Image (cartoon, rainbow, N blue to C red; front, side):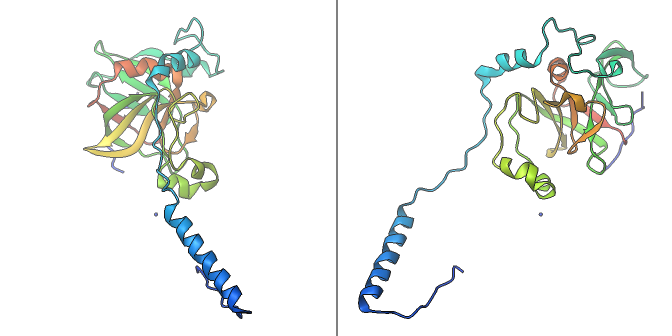
Length: 236
């Protein structure tokens, strides 16, 4: 496992046609007034905020967790066996509670009190989008809502523009079942460690910068991670 390292890392055009008669002019004027009046009373559209229905969380959890689930053996997703959760020995000197992401092997390690670590297979950001560094888990959320960043919309409008007002939490949400929000100081970096509705992407470079996990796997990790711990994302 890699040792601790620190990486620092946008006319109305007026048509003037000939007036055929005073009547036409009167009709035109009346039409304009009517249009303006209609515009004045048109209701203002209020931007809807995405929501996550907490009453559905248990049902969602059951939907993404295999029957008779054993994190170390259940594999309906067809993952390579090495990407299933495993308990491994941790290097000396690593702080219990912290998270380390090996971007080369595509592993996330959560350091435990007894000198071991729980290891999970992950997917990382596509080339140029992954951001190595040292972050703090600033908050964590069950079945989070999601809104693509401006950069994501500009980069792939065909994919993200329709979600610019956000998406409700649920099994089809790109952040999946749980999300750990990575901060630098008090600044949200918009990087996440999160569940994914695309489990077959685990082990690859597939995301827009975040670290993806199988939804059932991060449900287990989520309960063990405290806010305020450090997340080390090593270079790919």
